[in-house]
Amino acid sequence: MKSNLLILFALVGLSLLIPQVWGVDLKRADDLRDFDKSFSIYEKQVRYHIPYKITNGIIHDMQLNCDTASLVLSVMSESSGTINLDIPQRLFGGIFMVLVDGEEWDNLSITQNILTVNFPQSTSSVEIRGSYYITPYYLDSHLYTGVCDVVHDPPYSYILSPLKQIKNGVEPWMVKCNGDLTLLLKPAEFTESVCVTGDTHKELSHRGWGVIASDDYQDW
Image 1 (cartoon, rainbow, N blue to C red):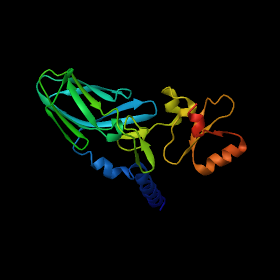
Image 2 (image 1 turned 180 degrees about the vertical axis):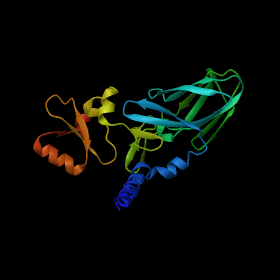
Image 3 (image 1 turned 90 degrees about the horizontal axis):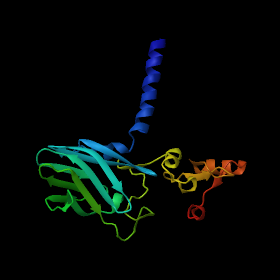
Image 4 (image 1 turned 120 degrees about the horizontal axis):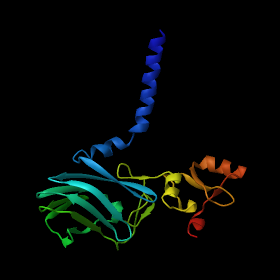
């Protein structure tokens, strides 16, 4: 009898965990079935995932430069091959130019945000330059500039926790929160911050634990 109860509790617990672990990301993850791997890039407040596939070579590093809207791939190849990348438009607003070993390259194709680059033998570097000077646009009441936007957009990007953002050099009052969470700063030195729900921030503010980081404060 006890063993049956334990099994029942285990199944109930598992059914509760599955939606939290996979949830709404299932469909998005299924969209990535044509890609073998995903490269993670940390950029202060966000962790970006760049899904990719490569033939006749390996990608051993990716460097993202948000100031110049460029993504540089370090490649090791002994023969000609192909790279497929799934580059979200919100990363840097679309693809403007591709360079292979420093030379402008046109042996490629772009379908929506899927980039396919056919590279020659002994290629060591592939650089993708984005549309840096683009017109900002609104989507779902959010203003996007198209250059490394701080967006929680699984499985392509995830906003980091406040602690990880601060460790990456972000000032506590510049920390970004996911969704409808509100940023609270600890009083005095304002060296700590936390993202909380609307009801929680009211209670903590009332108790004097935290001060709401307003937009005006974040612009200081």
